[in-house]
Image (cartoon, rainbow, N blue to C red; front, side):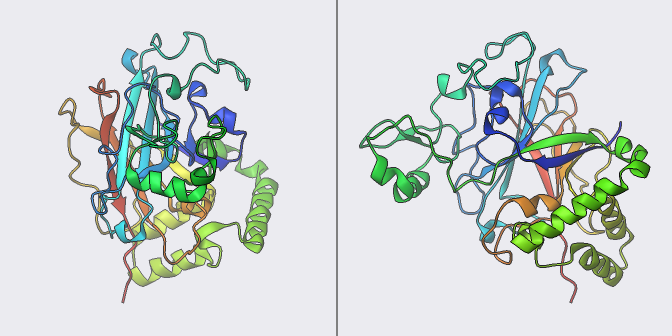
Length: 347
C-alpha cells in the first residue's frame, strides 16, 4: 500500500462540516455518527481528569467492509503541559466511527460541495453538544438554559470568556472558542506521486521554503519558529548514533510539510531506538488484533498556536492503531489505541 501524506491547508469552515466527510485539524470534531457521540467520561485525561480536546480526524473508508463505507478516526489530547508525560499516552484518546452507505444520517448520493447544501445534516439535530469543545453535553447554563456544556470547567471558561455578557442575548450566535486549536483541512497526497514528480517540483519546493521562512519572520511558524529543526534533528541523531532517528529525519526532510503519514497495515516510522510499539492492546469491542493505521508527525505542533514554545504539549510521533477487521462499534464510537514516542534528552 502506498504511504499517503497529510498536509495542512486553510479552507472555508463550511467545507469541514460532517456532511462533507472531512479530514481536519482543530476546531470542533466533525462527527460521523451524529447521535452516539463521546462525552466527558469517554474523553477524560488520565492525569488531570478534565476532558481532552479535539486534535484531528482522518476520513478513512475501509473498502473491505460494507459496514465501513464511511469511516473516520478521531484523535483528542489534553492541552495541559503537566499532563504531557514522556512516552506515555494518558493524555490522548482515539475513537473510530463508521457507517454503511445507507444510514440514518447521510443521503445515499455523494454530497454537493455547496455551503447551503443540506443544512439539516448536523449533530445538533440529534444531540446537545458542548458550546466550548463540541462533545456530548449533559449540562447547560442555569440562567439562560440554551447553551450546553460537557463539564463545569468548560462552563466556567465560557462564562469568563464571553457568555457572561451574552447570556440570554442572541443565543443563535455560536462563537469559535479560543480554547480550541486552529482549524485546518488535511489534504491527502500519495508519497509515491510526490516522488514521481520530484524532477518537476523543485520550483514549488523552493516556494514552500520561502513561505515557511516568511512564516518564521512573522512569528507564525509555531513551536519550532526559533529553531533550525533539520539541523537540530541531525545533531541529535549524531549524538545518539541512532540510525532510526536519522532515517526519520531524512524521511521528513523530503516532505517537511507532512503532518500525517497514513499506511494502514504498514510500518510506523520510528523516531528513536527507544520505546518501540511492541505490545498493542486488542480491540475492546471484538477482542481482535489492532494494526498500525497512521501516525501524527511533530510538524503538526507548528500549527497549534501555542503561546509559549517551551511550556506546551509535545510529542516525537503519535502512532494510531485500529481494529484490523474494523468491527462495528458497539456504541457509535470504538475506542482505539494511540502509542506515543518521544525524543529523550541526552545528558
